[in-house]
Image (cartoon, rainbow, N blue to C red; front, side, top):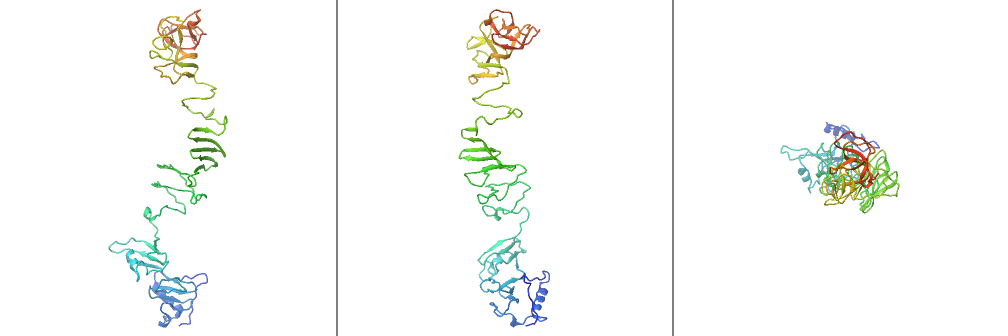
Length: 415
């Protein structure tokens, strides 16, 4: 054996050779051991290699792989070196297809490959290869894993296990379509692991569960304030918090504030356009319109400003004679306070203004302040001086010189 010696750096057990000129590089390495002469036959022993010392190279005749003798326990397969060796050099086999690789070795199923060795499938003229890179992961039959980097757009469900788990961030610039379920943020049911940020729109056709994955306590929080958001307060109850305080609860009975006479719906500068309900309980401090009215059944369809009296086939009808003491009120279409609102429609049960300011149909000239009574024309009032207070339907709030029928503002009542 040559007097030349070769030692690896203390921090490394890697042997560096040329990729493009393997044969010459290997020969150069051997000459570091044996000088200008290649090793004699006696310097290379059979499997078991008891004749080699630490730092010497060993070429396994069974699998044509290169090893170096060291103190690490190399775990080879049966029929190969099994102790105190580390694989060095090129650890990749190139085969035409995966079936060929699986058949190599005496037992098949990749038995010719060492644990940690790469298998490169490069294809053949028949086009049966998949041009992938595999890793021998364990000393077990068939223990290989596809370690190729997928091309853009080629990740399919076949490459995932269920459930899919990403340990790192996934940035998606297009659309994400999930046909089963998407869980983001929690992996252990308690500690948040990641965040889901949506800068566009998020659409969920099934159920959206937000929180730690526990069916008993899902929650939703705004990023700007961890004390503000929606959360489940019971089996059939959702709470709304703001500023760290539970303000509102929604449950099967309705929507409730958490404190009586404390919170408002809308405000002086931010008002709701309308509020609709079957019943309203509370205190009204203002009204949009100006009259008090009630629905009464009519024997005909009536219009705004028509003067009516009790009579006809139903409860009310149009006045039909001048200064009748049976005059009852004026038809209103926008009452400020509407009584008996559910007993009928405007066609069958119009609102009759009993007090307040409403438009009234008047014929002839009228001066502001004059009292109004029924005229000889049905449903029309006229300005008149009368001592019979029961004939008065109201008083004019504006003057008009027009002789025909018109609507004028008047206050209804025996004034």
